[in-house]
Length: 398
Ligand code: PMP
Image (tube, rainbow, N blue to C red; front, side):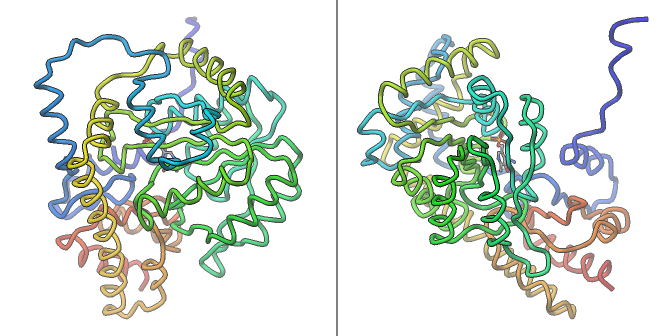
């Protein structure tokens, strides 16, 4: 008997497993609304113009492939810190932010989770109900008990804000609270500015540890507008963690590029926390890869490329809004008038309100792949498949 006979067959990842099923589907009209990826009008993953230009420049430089530092490329860290916190952030001026380059948003969350586990092994982690599937798995795997705070209310198709505050008020001091900075995945419902203020007040009162996850900056209302939540946290004086991802906003999914920042009270604390983050990284993968960091840095620091990137990201954001509206109109013209909320949601996903049975029927009868929870990636729609999807939804709703 081999040691490895102890390994049981784990279930397929709920989202990536769906893509495997989609790939195996031979129907030409099939549509994948399962995975969170923005696709262009041609149904393909875009290579953003600024990224393409940056790639050309980097290739021309023919740089040797040296190791980066444990915490990543210094110019990258500076560039993303400016993007996240704003150039005149007091926290940056005071040098009280520890930032490391990460392997996408997932890598940032895991580094943060490992740091927290070391500093506070008994803490509970609270995630929203529902949340991105990997939040629970990742924090559980890091050794935490993971529980939820109320968030989505199916009855009102919105946020159960009183329930959320009540759950946060009931949390023990030291509890880690994972919050989606913008474009909540999977529901598409974000807190308003005053609601954020109220949440911050409770976090401070109850001495909770906020962990902001910002995987979609620029997909809600705009880069600065979406980043305003971060500024609120800085202004509050709270210590907090912040993970970011450039998978979606630069269409750099496979490069695995993101960042983790920890905002602290003093430069002294930032130095200590950074030294611990470096140990977490060193003992996991030693140091991060260069390409994604070089691309993001080149785009963010060159005024022309940056403008081009901001324009293209803005166009992606507006196009998703048009697709939402197109789907709502398409459904209305098929007699379904109670799904207008899809146009109000933000980001790449729509929580459609469809039941598990309806989602399974969409998949098996029509080849339209979404999650059993009803989550659909509206950013994978285009004018070529929108009518087909509207027909399919109308059929499973009939
Ligand atoms: N957090 C949330 C809320 C996400 O939706 C995602 C991506 N699906 C991530 C983190 C992870 O991002 P990445 O793909 O860059 O690891």
